Image (cartoon, rainbow, N blue to C red; front, top):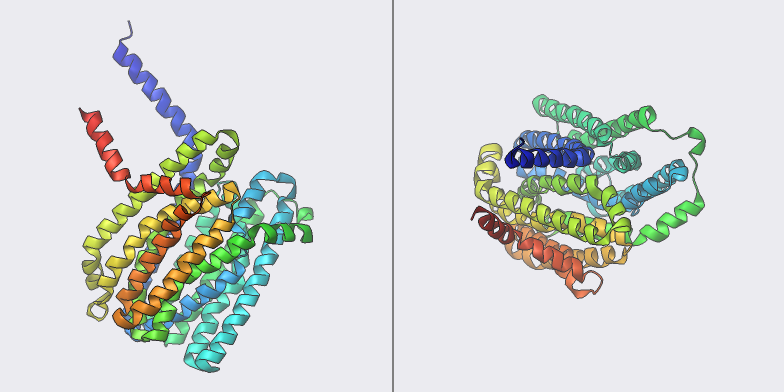
Length: 454
């Protein structure tokens, strides 16, 4: 006779097996996305240690300033297409080739325009022919390869992140080896900016190779559509403007430090910010894997969709909190051991900057909610508030406190854009309360655990 305990054990095992089969595809996809990001973060940290030590705070600050400017102007090629393209690929099988080509050409147009404006800025503000001009020009040239990101959108839609991961890991490896070779060869500052071109070009090439080998899209379907381009722009312009604001409050701090302080202060801040922002891959990987499933859930079962969204907010908050606490404790040791006494001021900046992670992590899920609910105006509103807050706080805090003032400006602007702003609009207020509930998740889960142990 089968005992009740054995029967219960069998049922639990079967349920676990069913759950694993259902989640296997999503977990595997998340594994590849996170694996690529972990390798990328690890290699970036490794190369940054050598490059920052070799160049010193002033020259490293000049390089970081150029890279931040390039990131700011790269927003011109975002075009608000990422989530829209993934959504269209998932929903409209017949027009997938047309979707890809149209998105790629729109991104190319935006990147070319962004690079042209970047060169105009560099020539007028830094001076044509100066070292800073060439640093900005080389760092910005990587923008011209970014339209190939549409291949990544394709693999996202089919949860085939391994191909994007392999392409980018290989480009990271080559670029890291190139940077180390420059350090050991004792080359000048200018050569380090060319590493961005190498990484972008190699990643684009490998993505195209994988797409050619794995995607099932007939070449005959590869065509540009003005109708689809207008649809993308009409639907995505709010996200597009929102992404510009997002990049402003993500990267403008280093540019404003260069304007209001000096390049050495930029170097101190850049070390802290680069390590802090490296953790932002975690929510991106998690949410990207579950985005297609959330789209379907919203159409099939709204109650379950809200429940899963709350679980997602809870998980992202807890992970962000763990990261912030660990880094707060370890920051002085990390800076001292890896970067040395020249970057001692980076530790205090690092401790403040890392707490922005709890808002950035939840923001990743909110960004997908905006797409699913088709309320794109809130991307513009919230990101705009964050950008304005960051610029105003930087103007106030940088002259008085330097890099740590910029870190506080970043933290507060992230809190405004990703959490507080949601309370003031009726449509987003339910998500605000879900995030507020997530902020209490450490207490909620602790109480639940205590109750289970009784």
